[in-house]
Image (cartoon, rainbow, N blue to C red; front, side, top):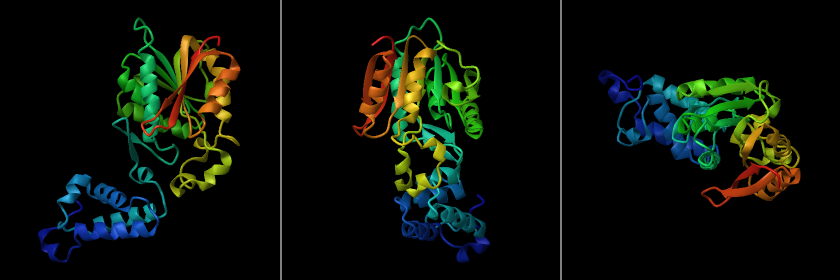
Length: 302
């Protein structure tokens, strides 16, 4: 393994355990919330080892190249660059997703959106493949995760960012679902080729942070993640208004809209959907921390 020294250099070589502790101290001094975990992830990345493997390898000697590589990653993390951007991937729905600074990092909370979408999917007829749209797809985490669970469904994933769509396509290829997901550039429903009355389900995790609140977010978010994927306007609801107003035109009969929402936004988003008069039922789903997380609106006269 490249990170280990030969026997001739063992005596003078720095030990894994010592380098790890130095990393923990450095990240703690930089204000990182989980210095031990992050140091283990970064060192494991350098050495192509799991965190479990690191536990029993404390006495292993490291090469100078490995030490320098670890130092470089620690420097980036000390600047509060997110771990996912440093190592280039993030787990979501028990799958690894490629991520860059062009896309929002998938959050565990968004898995609830996938769960609600899957629950909704079971209520459609099995006689024809489902058609699902994912707006603001970013890394493609939601669309790809759904595609792995719904092997006959067809997807259209849209994003205004061409760079984000490139990452989304790469993730679809990584998980062997690219042939069923069409990635289309465009601003929500303005994406080229979207046809009215063509989707059984529309899902979205749109930008929903209030503009004035972005600067108060953790540095990992406010300084590194794409602002366009965060900024929901003055009250955080800009995208919900646009999506709720237009979605019924693109939903098939009995179709549904599933939206991830931010904290304390459930009543506002439900009201936005209700005010259109084009949804017959609106539900709120909580995440596993008990927070309102998803609004599901079924198309039809209220």
